[in-house]
Length: 350
Image (cartoon, rainbow, N blue to C red; front, side, top):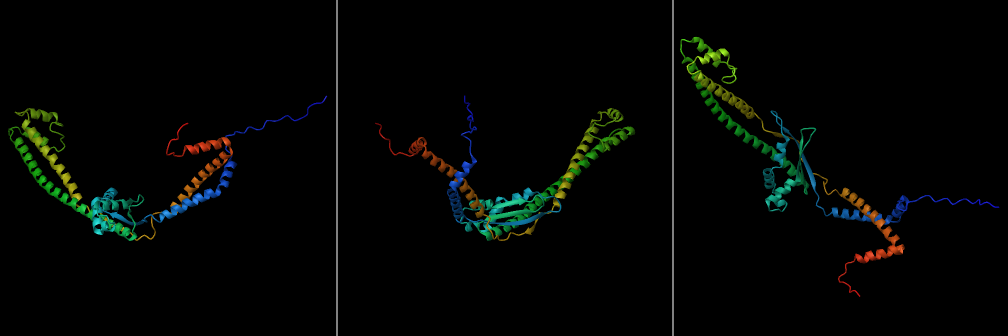
């Protein structure tokens, strides 16, 4: 009797048909390497040629520091002045930018100038920059310097206008102070007459009233009156109504008078304020290199885009090549190709 010594068949390891093999992908890329490289070079050449038709631009920057010794300076004020429409309008007229840009509409020239101007304040220091980006390098430098000079003039004009308002307010406050002082004097005299009008035979009563009326720490008319003063007021024929009314008038005039003095002190401080001056650290010079178009960056980005599209196209080509070897898929490709065609008429059905 013979025994079967043959080795049993071992099952092959499981392999997923949907698993992507990296080696297959590399083979596809290797087969289509010239197609991928050619697509990337084609995009690079097209991008490089397109840059020659783009209008070049040049940046000129002027750097300065605002100076004001009496108070801190708000960056927002200078930024608003730099980008203000009146300033841009004056620059357009002074430099005849409408004629240079061949734009008869002044609003168009002002908008173009505003779009080409940028303002920046350094966070680490107090320096600020004004940058002009134009197609003419000399014009860019001239515009940047002109804007800084015009900004300083505008800041001085704003200071003069504010100073005129402050001086006008000062004159008004002086007149109000004189009138308030007269009213306060009248109120004090009325209070003194009210006190002296009471019976001369009650000196203690007059002394209590005089002490109460001259107390500068009294808060309100009736607040803070002691029991003694309350009893004194009750002894008066009218219950102290005339006295309290006179005292109320004095306190009201005093409050108004001292509030005017406080306002007058602030006006005096504002009158001493100095205008903002701009200390130029670096004038804008004529730029030698263009700021855009950035030809190298554009060509590199186009090369990457072409390479990506080339890789995508390589896989499409490989898929189409393999599909043609399969009769079933070949028929489907032909059906898809015919379905994608635009027919001018409808075929008659038999």
